[in-house]
Image 1 (cartoon, rainbow, N blue to C red):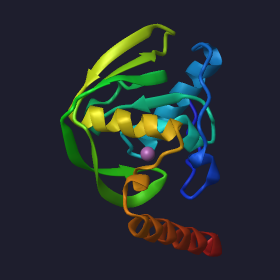
Image 2 (image 1 turned 90 degrees about the vertical axis):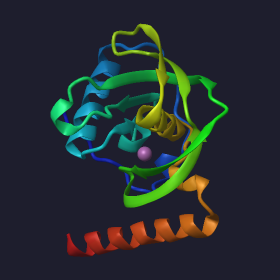
Image 3 (image 1 turned 135 degrees about the horizontal axis):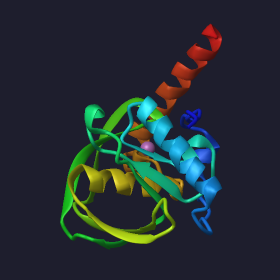
Length: 173
Ligand code: NI
């Protein structure tokens, strides 16, 4: 498995709508596994293909603590087919917005239909952290970042901060 470079906002590739996957073939499975490796090595709990520069509807999630990892969920074409009326406010972060966190309001529970790593159609009921994580990753497939839910002012502040950090890193490289 390969650790892939993660794109950092405001990369325009993060704002594009990703394309559907025809089938989970060997190539797609390899990408899924590389994404799991990339997510784990970055200490993340979720990753979407656009974050590694691939415009495909693929996400991986693993909300277990580090020492219990090994059962990540790999999803192609994930779709929210039901969402609870009840919302919940939770703090979110993103590997494409390093060290930035904010509270986001989302449906508390969701049911998700997807194609798994063995090309089987599956459904899961997600609650708590898993629910937040899956919704956040599916947003990436639409080109939506969690900062898009914040006020324009707050979003601009965060993006500007990331641009500054990146310029500094480039200057020191
Ligand atoms: Ni993210």
